[in-house]
Amino acid sequence: MRKLINSTYITLDGVIENPMWTGPYFDEEAAAFAGAQTDGADAMLMGRATYDGMSVAWPSMDESDPSTGAAYFNNVKKYVASTTLTNPTWNNTEVLQGDLVEAVRKLKSQDGKDIIQYGYGSVTAQLVKAGLVDEVRFWITPVLEGGANLTAPLAEFKASFELIDTRVHKSGVIIASYRPKTAA
Image 1 (cartoon, rainbow, N blue to C red):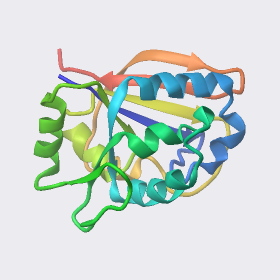
Image 2 (cartoon, rainbow, N blue to C red):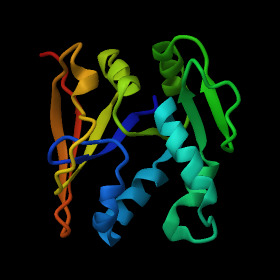
Image 3 (tube, rainbow, N blue to C red):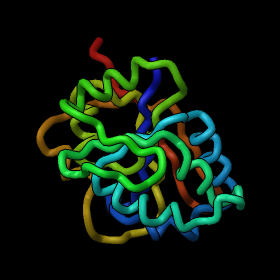
């Protein structure tokens, strides 16, 4: 069974939206980890807000420059959880139909590599609640930003996770990877 891995940039004050503040911290070390992460995933899952942002940014980037990651993002199979998007224009994008939990359960049961998901919002919260997120990787960036907070979609329920890996980069970014904690 494929794993669903959520990878989210987050500030010290819990901001996750529009992570432009990560720029100075995305160094060679972070690029290597991000590259390994995309090498291990042959599909990407996102909600409508993430799709709207990424589908504008990535197609305009130079795919011939491997350092941009544009070739991966523009060509990987993309699944969007949306009840309003009907005609996605970004290459290789499919809108999930019907119940989100069932659609993702079906994707995870297919052969393939990991499924990567960026950002943490209502889609991720629903999938965590359903037990379908296998790992979350928080890229904790040493800035205070103010704005949308990670915990807003979690207000409805509680979930426990266990730490499985920590990476501390020279730039000050900490990547903490967790998997859902199973009841003993």
